[in-house]
Length: 212
Image (cartoon, rainbow, N blue to C red; front, side, top):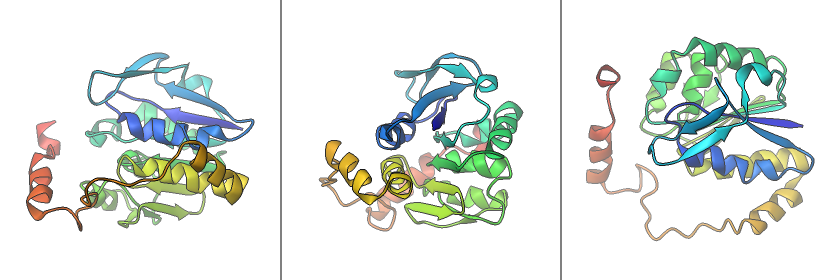
């Protein structure tokens, strides 16, 4: 089984690394990082890079695709090279997945048309533009498409899909091995729980498409 993690300029690190460190522990699986061109790809912070082992043309039939998100999804959502690759590999994938705003790339490629999907709460409304049906759930399965909400939910997505593929016990073993036992110091991880002023501040901080 081959798992392909798509990298592109300004992706969010945990969106890719979370599923890599959970789903990537599937016994016998090969995980490859892939981008338009092989080499280092900078994350949204600019301070960190992951290395793409292969170019898009070298990975043509992955079993699982993982599309991380980033703070400017409209940029890659207009990239015909990435969208064409997503459409091509989706024809033979067993699972096509995303984390955070990665679902906007899948939707822009026409893969989520009429399907339920999730994304980062700040960008959920963008799914509608591409014909998807947005939901605020943390992990959404719709056929072979699995979408996760913002950043940290990629870990949940990886474990959930691992359970579907290898069984609940195997997924629980990976959860235990990684000691994934969230006990956050604050209860502000969703717009429904966070103080209203923080939600408003983040909405105001979100860059508009016109400013990109």
